[in-house]
Amino acid sequence: MPASKPRILTARAMPEAAAPWSTPVARRRLSRRTFLKWSGAAGLAAASGTYWSTGPTVRRARAATPADTPLKHVIISMQENRSFDHYFGYADWIGAWGPPPGWSQPDGQGGTVAPYHFERLATPDVPHGWNAIHEQVNDGAMDGFYTNAGIWALGYYLAEDLPFYYSLHENSTLAVNFFCSQLGPTWPNRFYHMAGTSGGITTNGVWGYGVFDYPMILDLLDAAGVSWKTYSIGMDSVPYGNTDNVAVFWENFANDQRTHGSKGSLLNDMRKDRLPQVSFVIPSYARGWDEHPPADVSIGMAIQEELVTALRESPAWDSSAYIITYDEHGGYFDHVPPPVVDAFGLGVRIPTWIISPWAKAGYLDPSLYEITSILKFLERLHGLPTLASVNHLFDKGTPTGGNYQAAGDADVGPPAPPRDDIGELGDLFNAFTF
Image (cartoon, rainbow, N blue to C red; front, side, top):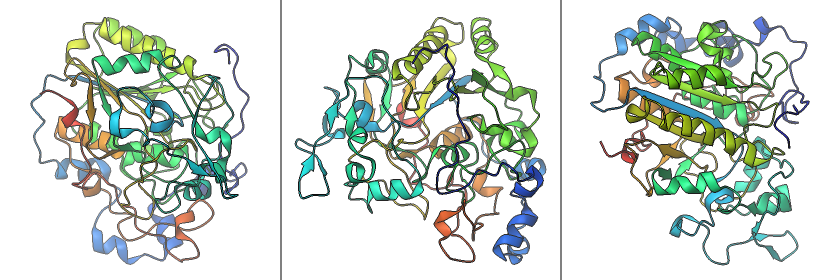
């Protein structure tokens, strides 16, 4: 698909949840009062202390010292909807981290269907909502991709299709045991990226400026005096529901000018050595620049190549790390069962590159990672408290309703505290030589 021709999209609400077009933002906001009303958990406030005084709470909780590393800049670019096996499972250097010989999927009629090489760089989208993914994963059997999503879920790419991404193996680290956070679609996983939790949300049915008001990573960075910025590679609409810049979904940052960076400003900041300490890169979903099907994957890859090349040629390179990851698997196959950490995930394995002069070259990092590992990395790097230590809203339960499918018919949904205090989850430091 030509990069210059925008796609016309509706909001990303999955069929399992209706888009809240007519619902005022104030009524959709997941505030403390709203949650206590929905869950009947009025005793939680007294039991766990202050949730909402984010700045003071974060400052009181900060006790760690920043890590001693040469890194001054971390750039995180989150792409869309690709699984690990779909991109790298058949690389000639992947070894045991790819599907075993003869691995296939039941066809639902007593036979099997094997993964196959995609001959096209633009292919149809496949199901990847909460219910569909649970059928695909099938309690860890990983045998429902074909029966749930059809033949398009079984395609994979090779080096000739993804030349830049495959070339990264020579001098970067590929995390081969990195999972998305939730067995759900885009926005819930991006909420984990910002806050270590989706607050129980399992659909793409909740969005808008300032709809959340619980602590997230930008609060921690601000409290510690760590500079940050989000750079959108093509601005998408928040009210229309096609943006991946979910930082503005939080009340504290809904109107923050630091969330309005562009591709041009990112390239200028690289060239002039004025990058913030933490950058979030958000390629456009509406324009098909984020690799979300049916986008041509070479377009999103070319954007990443341009940005990585610009960083390598900039004065900031020697003190930088660039992370390319994905928000979720998009319905594509993977053979590794996700570890179960709570009622929401982990989700299906996704590709993640750590690119830096300090990254282990040609390394296949086997550490257990998920999207929250990026938050753990930032917390350790800058001596931040964990989000789990300052956000106790979801420690004992989550809201219920159409956007909270993990709750089922229960009056209160399962707990979903931020995951950045789970010791078994790595913090990406193993990918570096320092």
